[in-house]
Length: 434
Ligand SMILES: NC(=O)c1ccc[n+]([C@@H]2O[C@H](COP(=O)([O-])OP(=O)(O)OC[C@H]3O[C@@H](n4cnc5c(N)ncnc54)[C@H](OP(=O)(O)O)[C@@H]3O)[C@@H](O)[C@H]2O)c1
Image 1 (cartoon, rainbow, N blue to C red):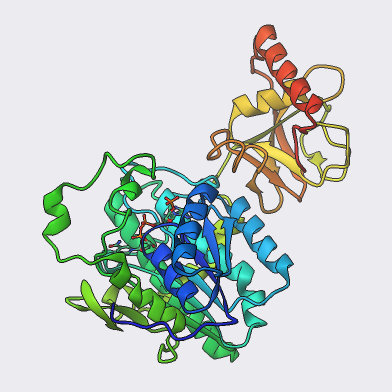
Image 2 (image 1 turned 60 degrees about the vertical axis):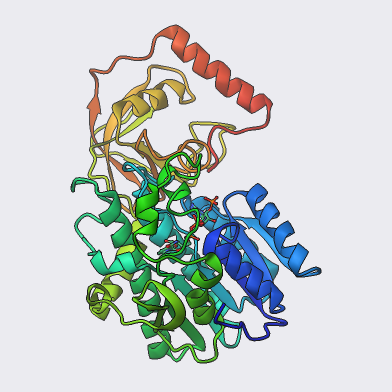
């Protein structure tokens, strides 16, 4: 170990991915230095194991394991809401968690390419949601973990999500980690411009032996997909104890500077922490600012050009609008806050068949008149991704025409679905959480 964390008594940290690798080591060293640490983890079980291990070394440490899945914005929002509701300061947010080179193009619950979503969009949303709390805490910091691989990254604003390009696991990782570097740098610029008492720093761990090279590739399911030994040893590598130091320096050192990047000093891969050179790929502050805007659009927007459909039992004509505020088609007939639309005819058929009311189901081709968002009833925790391209909006939908040549589901299939919904209702689960 080369870096000693200065005393952190009375300071509260949030460390994402604190159950493994550099995050776990950071949480351990912070706890030993007297900090209170929120271990923000996607598996509470793994978080508790890490907590127990840290407590062995730091008995009495204030460790709080909380659920955070960066690959599901609903979870990020819930976690952030919990921290805000604590009504307590947060001195440092450590954006550490990440995934690396999954074997194929996976998507997060909100439909982002997995590495972009987990490594960048999730941390971006988390950071922005926690900003009000951080800004109320004197001398607060955000320390964000990037990677040397960011050197090879480029930000492709036309296809951040790897939809139209051929998917490359490595270049998607590189883009996401470059995005982390830019997140940290842009936040530093904003803090300077606005005179905020907030330091934004960035780190990378060189090449550190963690679960990343194994669990990362197969999404943590097992360890059978390890890198071959030769690839693990061809480059010098280091233990998490040393690998976590640039991040610990970025998060705690009084010498850390606004917008600076810290990494290992020997070949940039191992050894004591020094201030790293910002790679050419990450120098443009204009690109960093543009990326911040793009992230905001991705957070709230949906990349789907349609056509969109709406299934109902209501009789409508071309040019009519469907607006939120009328009683819902589903559930207990409560006032609906949203109107729902989908990019697939099949989902619209279900909508038409399951809508309340008498008469035949109708399917309209509709045009949103305002922003649309992923329908959380059919994404996030209930179903991964947004396979049915189901969305909702607070603005009216305009009817463009009616689709008449659709075929409903077989009666027994429909009955099965109705039985399933009735069973859910008996258990108190509403079909639509509006
Ligand atoms: N190790 C290196 O050489 C290296 C090099 C460059 C950059 N990095 C960066 O260092 C950071 C830490 O990685 P590591 O090397 O310590 O790897 P690790 O041991 O695999 O740790 C990664 C952590 O991120 C968590 N995580 C993954 N997906 C998540 C999600 N959706 N929501 C919340 N947490 C999630 C993991 O949780 P689970 O345990 O539940 O999977 C784990 O706690 C990452 O940002 C990585 O990109 C590492």
